[in-house]
Image 1 (cartoon, one colour):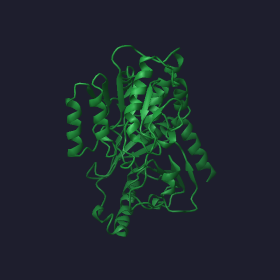
Image 2: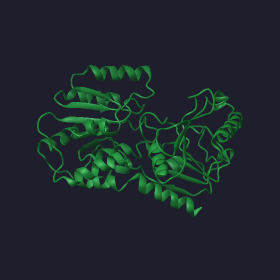
Image 3: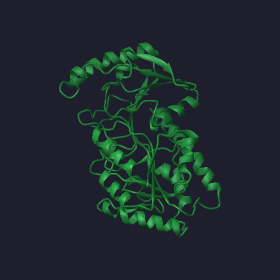
Image 4: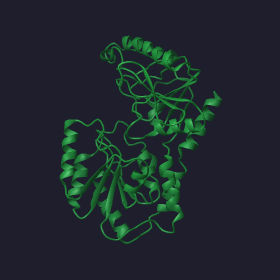
Length: 358
């Protein structure tokens, strides 16, 4: 598996697919992004059947956008060095939207998948000679050049931790709503470039009686983004809980009544087509206030701003707060069931069927 995110840190789709494969007895080699080691190095992940591989920064990386043919030739050499360390590969699963390896054939795998979780970076929108192309949205797949390669949409999945939480919520008679201070939660990286920082700051400052809890790391933050986080930290109604995993993550989520997603669609390279974060929010049984996200726009009871009117987010947050105070059922059970219907286990089975069909 070629991943643009490292194994250690925020756990996203690549990590969950790796775990699904390992649980079925496959030997998974998870390739961290280049630049993590002076040479190609294998190391244990701490989980059965998953091995990590680190490798140096890509050779001739400065030529990537100026002399692409030269960069791609050097990348083939790196692919061969990786295979020399891992041994023969049955399946290459490429999640890297930066396109470090333009030609999967260099790995000598029996089959390969290009899996578009995000829109490919400008200048690297090629099919990589994959045998199968998957994407979480049709628009991401359509951004790749036309080819005869089979293409399928496989939506975002729900991680087992959140699936367990959803099942526990559904086993309760009512959603967990507590009186007193209302807590607004955000889960994930605090500093993606497409976070609508001005609007989010305005929401926090306009609602001093609401408590805003941010759960997640500050990943790849610029100086400007770090300064924004420092402003958040200084606000009396903001809590920066940091990166949480496992039971610590669940504990930090249990008393959150409203979940917030505040992105700027114009800055989002995917233009708001899909979000795994919303599935995680649905699993909690809480209210959800969100920027317009195409894939979840019809979710029952979601407080979602129209694509053309993001300024409505402030009024929608007020509506969600009132729904909590009134203990009004907006359809939390149906949202939790929707999340459960999109598991990584089900996705993995579907992908296996697509591979078999080849």
